[in-house]
Image (cartoon, rainbow, N blue to C red; front, side, top):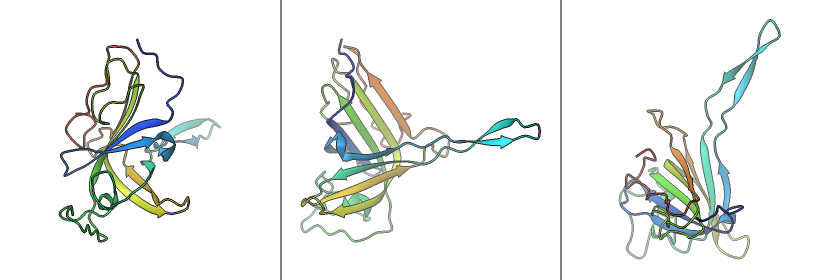
Length: 198
């Protein structure tokens, strides 16, 4: 049996799949480069009563987002660049020279972030049988921000994906899973690109 570590640190895998793609783009990552995980608050509001009591008014769950630091070296869609995720064209540009023009189009994405004592081959793959693991899967996310920087003398960028917590049909758009027992695995993420409930 593999024990769950005291904390998930250092390395993880991040996989991103667009609505029209058949394969997941892999980003090997340092956990510290995930600069923000904002999972929506489920707030309440106290409503005062005439007798001095209060009742809780439930407010809708807030939108959620994740911000990642990446190091783009191209405008391709092969994990070396992210521009075509932010500004997709009607068709992908894969022939040099790559050209990406600002676009009003938007693409839905599925994100998979996995930590494991032995990382799987890809973020969406099943985890190893003897590995403790923790996985977050997000569906129907949009890239809403791309902020390039040269602050640390390396070209980097902060990118943000944002999603609503539920589909129109009230199904969840985010799922978190874990395992810590030898012989138990997290199964491969469904091939259905945009449904964590599949």
